[in-house]
Structures are given as C-alpha cells and as structure tokens.
Length: 164
Image (cartoon, rainbow, N blue to C red):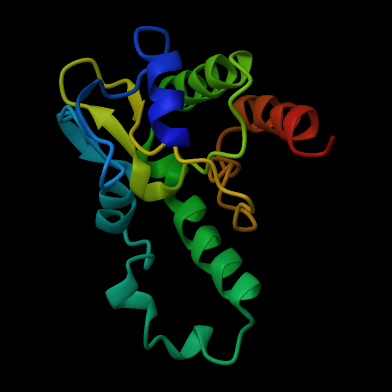
C-alpha cells in the first residue's frame, strides 16, 4: 500500500510509472509500462557479474555474510558505471532522488534492477517505490563510483539523507 501512496504523490512530479489499475483485495498495483532499458542490464552487458545466475554459485562470494556478499555485488556494478552511464544521466538520477525526498518519501531502494533508462528521452525512471524498513548496505546509492564531480554530489546526498 505504501507504493500506491508514493506513486500517487509523485506521479507528474517525478519519473515514475502511472497506476492504471489497483486490486485492493489482492493488494496488487498495475502500473504502466516504462519503455527503456533496465540499468542492471546495461551493467551486465558491460561485464558486471551482478545477476542471480552469476552470483548464486560464485566461489568468490562463498562464505561471505549476507551484507558482505551484497556489498561485493554492488561493488561489481558500480565498478562499470562510469563506462556505461553518462554523467548527465547520473545527475538526473540525483535530481529524481531529490524530488522524491522533497515529498518526504524515504526508505525506498533504487537498485540496479528498478531504474530504467527511458527509451525516448534517456531519463531515469524509478519503477519500484515500495518502502523498505531496512535498505541493503550499499544499494540505495549504487551510483557512488562515477566521475569526481558527480561523486561529490552523491556523497553530499548520502551525508544529507542517510547519515542523519
């Protein structure tokens, strides 16, 4: 239900999908399709081993705690970001996160798999706005390993929103 509320608040103000139907009995939202490419797929194509089928039996990850395992997988994705995503796109992601936060919506987790690069305008679209009680370490701001300028902006965001 929190995602429904978040989408209603943000529609027309942030790059989020429109809701076209709700099944309250089953607590199911039906959202409009956002045409484009999932950021995760771009990173995988660039060589990041972040998909479940690549990580489930990965010996490098064996024996790690859940938190360390996730941090390692996130690091694999962030290592290729500057080769795949433009600085403009990353700044636009930051702007979208600022817009979302300006409506007091926090504790969402924009992971590699729930941000889409719009097919026509190449802008970031956030497709999963469910509130998480606990965000996985490192996932909320997977865009940290980028150019120095954007990295500084993101570090400021992390300090402002996550280190309160």
